[in-house]
Image (cartoon, rainbow, N blue to C red; front, side):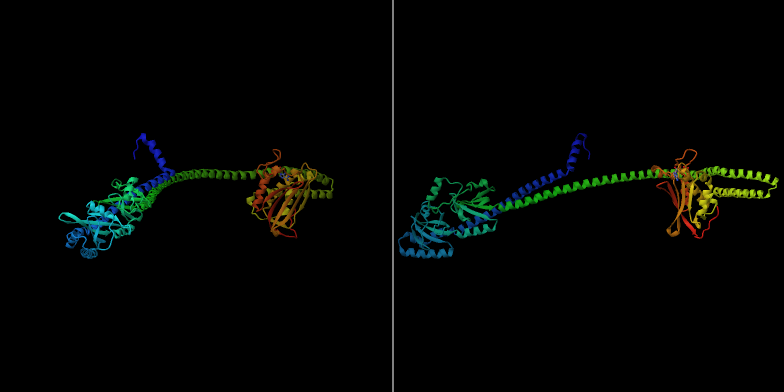
Length: 616
Ligand code: ADP
């Protein structure tokens, strides 16, 4: 929908308002109130209209009932007026025989016609003859004087209102008396009460020309004066012979009801009534029907609650539709956000994967480089050991060489002087020295051999220890080292002898270095059976100063050394640990109370208690 720019803020404000739950509650409340009021008004109006139509119908019925009841015998007085018997009676009113004959006739006619009483009076209202013995109503004299043809009069004895019809008995144009027919309206009244009870609690009243209720379906309203009667009028009514002495209380029903028709009125004992009236002009009567509006009100209230429920339903429907719309909108938005987040995530995963791949490649390159460097370092370390060893060897070899030269020269001189026996002793000494030197070179050869040239096999642990000690003998002897070897002679371990010796030389060399400044220099090499003799632990303990706490964890770091430059590369322990690892064991360092202990475990090849040690 296109909204002009100037109205857009208002439209937005409205849309925001419509979206609020509070507004919907307000709207639902408003719709409930409107529904209530509308349904109430509508139902009350239509109910009242229905009631009014029904009441009008009934009013017609009552009126025609009354008119029919009264008109049924309208002909009777005039018919009787021409009867010769009655004519004869008024001609001679004192004739007892004529009275008797007339009375008999009137009684017969009364029974046949179904009237209440029929009687003949003289011009002054004296009863001459009657269908039965009776007292004429007080109003009769007045009616005769006024030459009325009909009147209503109350009967004090029965309490009912009776209708009287008159017709003059004339002879030669002079009224000598009158025929009077009396109807009792009590049965009609009873019918009204009955009908009123059955139809919407309707009440009926009939008021005469003086606005006094002469008939009513409500007993208490009988002889009440409609509207408010002035005290003087009330007194006049009281004094008139028309009604019983007691005139009832005022009924607050406007005498000019025509103008108020359809408006509710309240009467004693009946608060809410719809009043409608109809004039019965020939009789000078007013028929008023009062229908109870209570039922209409109740129906209107029910309809109102129905309307309120309808309003609430519409409000709730609007709330449901708008929240459904909002939920759908939120769902679509959430789906879009989810899609976006998904796309972002995929992008992130892609970029992370690429980064990881890069990092992985870099790591692979580093590892390859490390491996290469490690190989190079291993070689460098071997060279460093060889350097150390060659220094020792030159010392070891120089000494016997000098001795050999001296012995050789001495032997030449001894030969010249013919001392054969002394020459032989010299030669024996020289042979020992050569043997010692060849031992050293043999060790050197085996140490220098490349590891992968030899097949991993078994080695005598004691032989390896001795060989390593021999390689360092020049240093240990110079220090006056106290070496204790506690290794079973027949123990062979699964290791390459050459590399095992390299490990031991490293450990012994470090121990000798550490103990250089100590007064007590003790090196202990011992073994311990593990795993039911399947494995063995080798311990190398020294009495040196040990390692500082901070350094202990760094011992196996490559290039960690505490030795001055040129003396230590910081690779000995790293390489040793690597070799032990290759043999399937682990090299560990532990601080002792005095000194250090390096230990590693190896798989036992054979453990021969009888001993099988090579001579070193
Ligand atoms: P390097 O001997 O070339 O320094 P190593 O890896 O063999 O390299 O030893 C590293 C360090 O460990 C040595 O510098 C030394 O400080 C310490 N260390 C090794 N063995 C002992 C020991 N038995 N007593 C005290 N310190 C030792």
